[in-house]
Length: 48
Image (cartoon, rainbow, N blue to C red; front, side, top):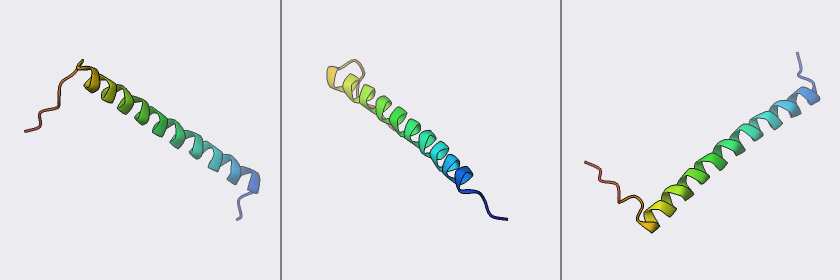
């Protein structure tokens, strides 16, 4: 059974919106962390 084009395009649009929102959120958090590191609000991360 074939899927109608309208449903296919709706699913692609929904996935695209979800992924673009996720990427935008990650970039926002990374920008905030980088800004805090530059201004000295937080220090370098000590691992191990």
